[in-house]
Image (cartoon, rainbow, N blue to C red):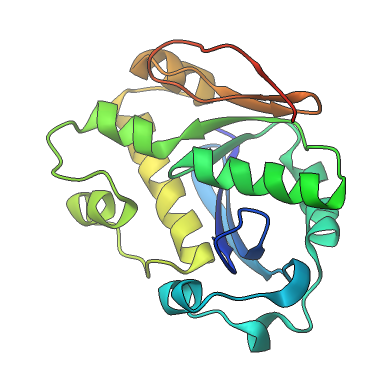
Length: 203
């Protein structure tokens, strides 16, 4: 599997307010590196709820690059990789919403939601939130830190890969009855565990 697990933290209730991104890069089924980038959100508006949630405030991001520069650095490295996220609907909506805010073209990639993979693989778990799944699997990490969450997401994905004896994202999707989502220049198709749904146009 060649993939990258991502996790965003946002500055406020708007999906277009990323202030942090973590990425865990998977090559040949192994997490080879984990990285973190602060992002200066539009308007620098932070909600107290979000700060309490992830501990990031204006002082951490005042010298950070804005989303267009961060995306420009990351997007070429996504080529040929499946993007993984725990609750991918949220993280993909952050990309979409922030690209829309800045008038950017969406990056193109296939993606899988590890919440759906965990629900299918371990239906007996009481909860499929990231911290609970990792506790069940013995994966240690610091929750609500973007880099740590990305590492945890990648670890969960690799455990589902081993459990289903899959070799890549496509075979894992097939084994779990999950459709790959796709983000592309014209819109997106969601990752679904109940068959493909109609392709949604870009708003």
